[in-house]
Image (cartoon, rainbow, N blue to C red; front, side, top):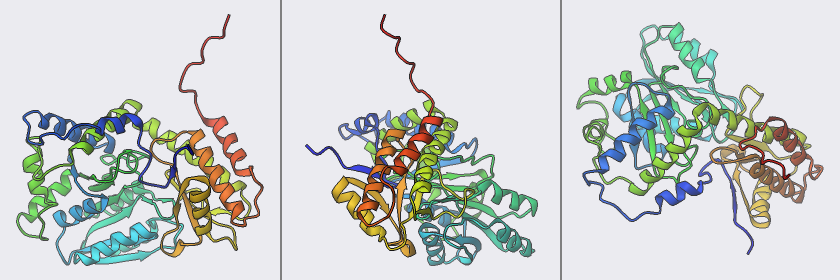
Length: 403
C-alpha cells in the first residue's frame, strides 16, 4: 500500500526486472553436458566489459574482496614489496589485506577527498632503482568518498620509468559503469563485483587477469602464497572445459547472462556516458544545497557512480540517512569510518534514469531540511531537473500526433 523502498546506495544496486526474472529458475545440474556452453559464453563476454582482448576473467562465488585476495595470492609472494595509497575506507581495507597476507606495503597516505597520487607514485617508483616494488595498487573508484582516480595515468608513470611492476586495480564500483580499458591501459589484475554496475545481487567476484599476470602465476608454480579456493591453477583447469572446481552460484550465473546481454547491447561507451549524465544531475543538486558540498575535492576527482556529500555544519548525517529511510522510504549510503555522521552518499550507478534520481534527490533534500539544514526546499531537485533536461537524449521516438 505504501509503495516500495527506494534504493540509492552505491551497491547493491537496483536489479532490472529482466535480470530478476532470469534468476527465477529451478535449480539445475552444474555438471550437465550443456552447462559448459553457458559458462564459456559468460567468460568470453565478461572480457568485453573489461575491454580485455587477451588474458582471462575469473568468476568466483564471492564478493569483490575474494577477488582481491585471489589477485594477491596467485601472483605475489609474502615479503614482496608493493606500492599502495590509502584515501578512503575501501583503499584502507585493501592495504589491510595486503599487510595481513604478508606483503611489504609502501603506503602513501592521501587526504580523503583525493585519489591516487600520481606524482608521489612517480617519485617512489623512480627511487626504486632495483625494481624491488613488484606491484602497484590503485583504487579506481573509492566508494566511501566518491573519488575516481586516473588509472591510465598510473600506467603512464610505470611506462615512462620503464618499471616492470604489475598494476592492480580495484574497479568494484567502476567497471561496467565508468570508463575502464584493461588492455589499453595495461592493467594486470582488475577486481569487480556483481552487485554494482553488473546489476546483480552480491555473490560473484570478478577478476580480470592479463597475460603478464598469468605468467607471474606460472612462475610461482607450486610456490608462493598458500592458495586453494581462489587458486588460478584450479580455475584455469576447469574453466577451460566450461566448468568450475566447486559448486558455482548457478542462478547468479543465469542473471549474469541476462546482465551481459543488456550491457553489451547498450554498449560500454553509452553506459559510461549515461553514468556521467546521472552524476552531473546529482552534483548540480549538491551545489544548490546551502552548506552541503561533495567530499571529492574538485571536479577532477568527482565520481560518476557515487557522490559522498558533507551535511551542513550542525547537521548529523546519520539523522539525514535515518529520516530518509524511515520517513521517506529511501535508502541513502552512510558515511564510513571518519566520515560517519559527517557525510551521506547517493549511489548513481547501475540501472537508473533521471526521474529515479530526482526521487533520490527529493528524499535527501526533505531529510536534510527535517534534520535542520537551512536549504531551500526544491532547490536541489530544480537544479537536477535543469541538468537532466539539458543533457538527456530521447530513447524512444515520439508518437505521431493524432490526426
